[in-house]
Image 1 (cartoon, rainbow, N blue to C red):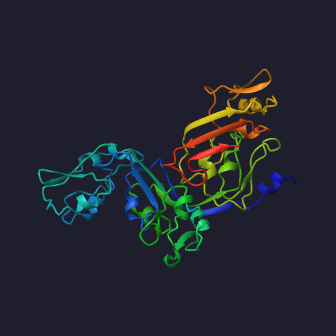
Image 2: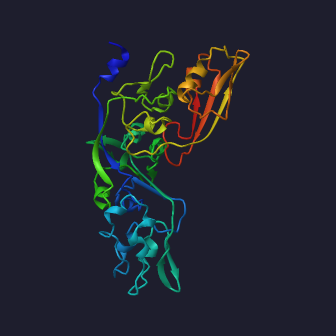
Image 3: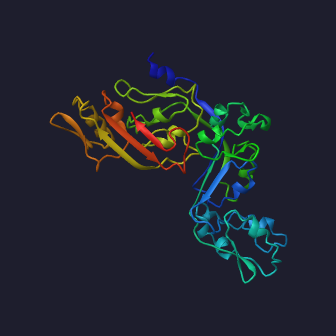
Length: 358
């Protein structure tokens, strides 16, 4: 039995996770309001615009702001909050007593004061949302054992925390934060976010992966480089695909989020990592003209290729290069060097900002 088949036959790795169905999520951010540990990161590009999280209605002592619960129609599921009828009609009513609770509690500063009365400022805040992926990398990085992973959830012993910040550094969704006395941003699987979602976009599900990588794999080796547990190995000369040791996998989803071909199907919490810049260079003093880089790129570009040989040495057509790294991975002399720069505001963790091939 080959090494590939031995590892593929391993028992699939499984973990309970909070699954967000983006075909239903309206990006209101209400789940963030209910999370007791702050394990949901909700950000907006433009502050001062209502996201329909309903917190103002919940804190108003005289119900001067109508709740939107029960008003969202089935056909509106998955639409941004700016397209909801209840969002358009939402306003502060005349029975407002100007207690300023809504003004103080609004997490995005969308409650404004005009002529001495609060009003809701609407518009597109361009929000994004992500929750703790329960990868347990924070637990593995904690030098004092303050964080542990028990019964499918992260637990904290604040007496052991020294505020070193290692958990924040390795957190892929960047939900971990340091508070005054201990860290926050880890999921305790309480289910409050699931119950609070007005459109049923959140659920708790058992996620499994048997290590299978689809035929869409372009053999770039990115998954091998970003895996924090060394669960993925890849020899571009001898392996048809990267080999996954599922006994080491912790379902952190970094490989799936980083795969430029979406060949790894386990992503349920992390968004796709976005490359904002890439640079590729060839050291022709080391090049042996083997043309393996050309062959690798033909697979990626479906017959076309960015590397080419000129007078027996490799060159790169940067207009065609998509920065996948397949040529750099297969080069036997490491004469091709690729640098990928990621948008680290979405996914952090291993190779959080810059990834270098080889």
